[in-house]
Amino acid sequence: MIAAALLLLQVATYSLPPVELPRNVSEEPEIVWYPISGSTRGELQREMALHGPHDDEGAHAGMTRTWTNWHIHLGGGNANPCYMQTIEVTVHDTVTLPLWTPPLHANSDLVAEWGRFVTMLGRHEAGHRAIALDAAGAIANALAGTPSRASCSDMLAAANAQGQAILASTRERQKQYDVDTNHGLRHGTALEDIDRR
Image 1 (cartoon, rainbow, N blue to C red):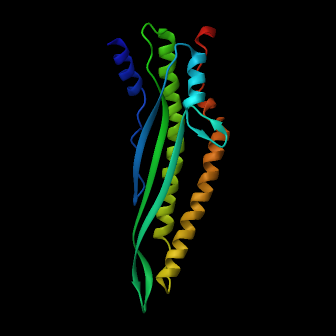
Image 2 (image 1 turned 30 degrees about the horizontal axis):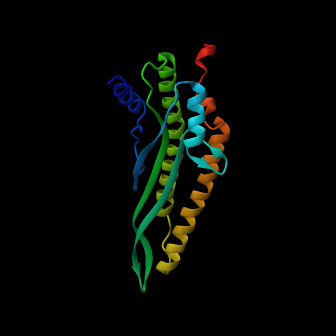
Image 3 (image 1 turned 90 degrees about the vertical axis):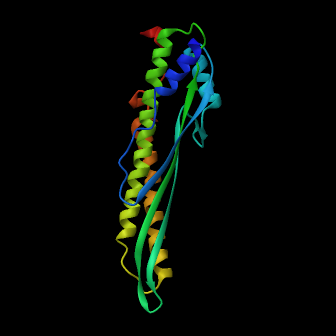
């Protein structure tokens, strides 16, 4: 019963914050929790390294993966200039975070430190999410401002080129965000050693 209550407390520690979406942008957000076990800081760190999300840089305690796509509906065509009629940009983002169910009689300081850690890790990942949503807004604005073209195929090619260019610069922004924050360590995403307090 106590372990179940602690599990509910841990899951409730972080949820995706509500955001105001840019015009013509929708989001499909998701949190994925990967379970870990342990009763010490070292054990929890090892579990996160083993079971946490991986990329080409290695294992991470948390990660945000985003995928952005757009659908445009064109008007005109044939003998008339082709123009942008409607734009829909969708961001699919998945935030992966660790889920620790503290064992019975877990160290209360470690439980408190875990709550702080997961909250700060979630906030760091929210920064990645914000970058993706900002980029989606930039794509929507760029596509809306695409001037009419003589043919719809030219219009579609121009719109897709703009969107892809924004996504390319966004990938660089995401990398720079991790450099600037040292993958969130400057945001407090290290699981602190409670014995040194």
